[in-house]
Amino acid sequence: MGSLSGPNNEPYVDFHSKWKEEQEQLTDELRSALDADLGEMQLRELVRKVETHYEEYYAAKDDAVRQNVLTVMQPAWKSPLENVFMWIGGWRPTMVFQLAYAQAGQQMEAELAEFLQDLDTPSMASLSAKQLQRISDLQVVTQKAEDELGHRQAILQQGLVDQPLLTLAAVELSGDASAEQHPAEHALTDAVDEKVKGLEDLCHDADRLRCDTLKKMLKILTPVQAAQYLVAAAQLQMAIRRIGVAKQGAAEQHKNGDELEHKNGETETHTKETKQSSL
Image 1: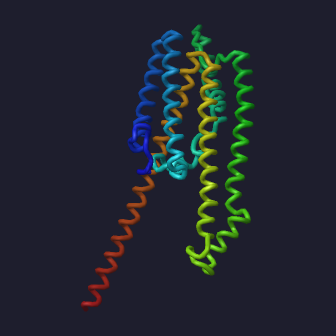
Image 2 (image 1 turned 90 degrees about the vertical axis):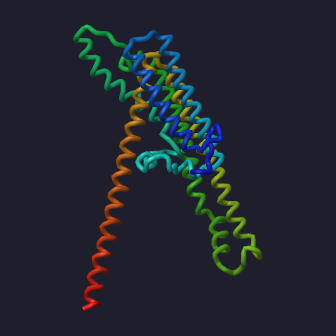
Image 3 (image 1 turned 30 degrees about the vertical axis):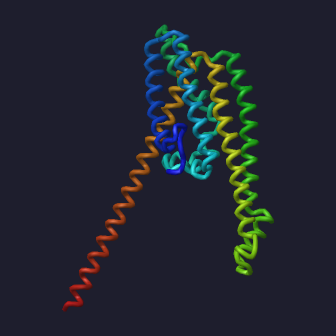
């Protein structure tokens, strides 16, 4: 983790931490703007600001992937809960649509109550037929691209047990020849490095699909809808992050408690044995 650098040569973990803080600040700005019923032009500027913030994140992450893709794929700066639900180093691109539909359904219930009170608040629940069609078309294209990436990932994983690699591994571990006498060890390393390079390209393409899908979704939505959508997306990310950190802390505390209890038990046993031997 320490070997990765951010866009300004700072440790990548520091960049990531600062980016999360900025995300929370931008989310607060969006929420305040929505509460204040700002005009579409002002909301559009804020939405573009958040969009640029995501673009900066993916640019920095792409550079980090080129530095060490293995560290990025299992980042120590994320909680185990977040890592478990990652797909090729991040969220599934099709989650963009799941969030949109879930948010629309949730807001539809709220707007029904407002309608009965003669209130009119535009939101994700008021998606037009044209917007829904454009979202559906984008979802079909995104799902196809996501499936192709998943297929590439499967081929890459299955390739670890292909015949050439098995042969090289058998020779390298046979003990029949040293590394100086036989090129098997170097050949095996080169073969694994080729797989890692494939993983870099896969992660790059997955991140590009994630970012592009989000940007295309925002273009379909009105400024108000886009602002509401970005707030919901950020809230979901931050909630999972908080739960993950809490669970990780509880697990570490439990582990430390078990270790302390085991250590105390060993001390008590040693004390009893010492007393018995002195008798």
